[in-house]
Image (cartoon, rainbow, N blue to C red; front, side, top):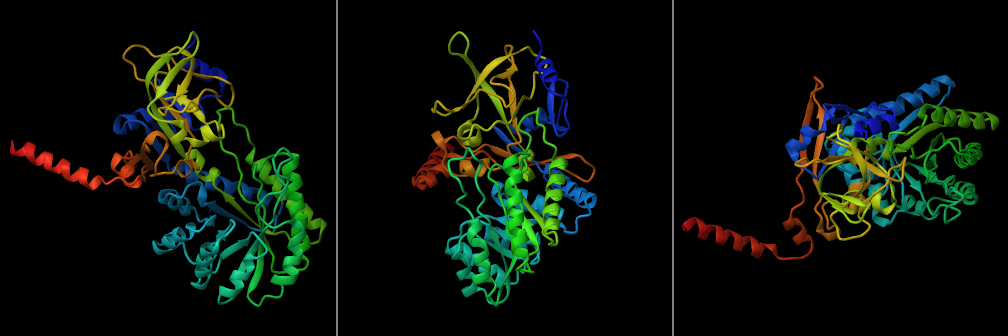
Length: 481
């Protein structure tokens, strides 16, 4: 039988830019994972911060390549979609790269305030405010504008939203309109619930915005749920959107920007193939062709990349704490964590991640199922993006197997309810940040310890103060003895 490293090298083009093996142990972005495990233990979440800057710089470079290639007259602006991960260390790393912010809900705005207070952003930073907005969200947006955040742009999601800004913004301000795109043909609904339908947009501008003494229509916003893909559906929707932009531009000289949203995919398999530069070239070329055909200047282009920004920076590391043969052919490796609580997308949407052994690469491999700690029968992982099976090294006596799930940095903490109550009271794992110093040496920092029982009991309403006092009394008694 062949070893695990034989399997990986024969199945994939391995090693890759991010993954390689030395002394039968896996390195992730040249970080020796076994050293991290020895220092911090498992289960463990990792964030490799330099990857965030790498992704941003790559996207900027590719868009600027296309702009030069086609002699495109507009400019490109990169926004970070905060909902993909609100952690301070994520936004602060992203903002090192001269980027801007896209928000989705009410409490994004206090984060914007804190970033400004600490000097991470300026008042001229673009803050693109998306989402269906309740009054508090609109109030926070209005306060930002009134406080001098000149590029805070609320994106109208319904026909009545403008009323609030007209009534409460003190001076001139910019707005955008989100277009309600048609959903993919196999989706349950025909048109997105978000945004304003095509038939209403021109009338909204003519009857309301054009007559305002304060509002200026700056941006038209477009987003496809399934992301940016080289499909007839995507190109059809993008073209339809651009024709609407051209129609509005002819009656609204101030309109000069399109926001094409997010949706760049990330690597969820070592077999991942996506030609980012080709897709960006096609976007730029299509936008330019449609504008030239309609005799309007090309717009500036904004994107709002979330998963693309932060997804590939994340990893979750587990130990195999037991193996159980439940029948003649189903062998379970039990992890010291839970897919439902730590990687909810793997359970809720059947999302696949890059899963690799961390050690024992010279061992023979075999087929396994991975089981989590909760009592739920759905807490398992038994297939990869490239196959309907999972293979890992066969364990020898006295060996411990470690495994990693990679590119897990987007959405998992917020979907799981970070710091809250999770299924079977499985605690949130330790979270370690990895960066590099000026000499390129690895620097690690413990962002958070594993969630403790006291924090859970407080959330659940139990009076842990009495328990704590009793423990102190017992300790005093023991000392006196």
